Image 1 (cartoon, one colour):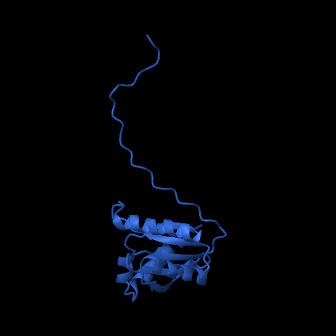
Image 2: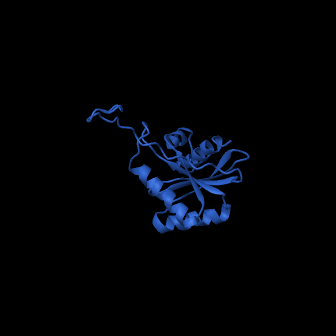
Image 3: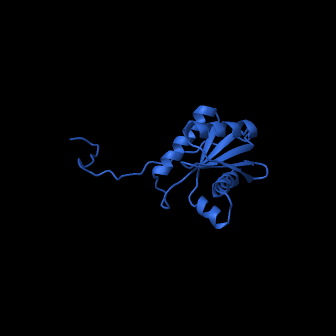
Length: 155
């Protein structure tokens, strides 16, 4: 007879949801950021900096595929950000959906093409907030909201 206790053979293991990815820490030398509110046909753009913790809307990119990336590249050359910020949409309960995956794919493509750190931000309700504020360009205003939320989270 053994001294060690044994667990029941068929004890159910409780399902534990996977932990969300841990965001990369934001280096203190990262001061300027370019943010995107990704959409399939339009991508809102905003610039901002850590010191003022504010964002400014930039003209929305109205292009898809390679044409979109050509315009993103032009914005990166113009603003020379230290890092990029991408809004990632989620359902109200935090569950991902088709647009979540599309925004995350866009973030991966930006990392690969431009070799810049890309930070993902929960952008639930940013477009609703932009529209309710009366913004002329809801996509650019949403990018500002996303970037300001990110900047407020920095130490």
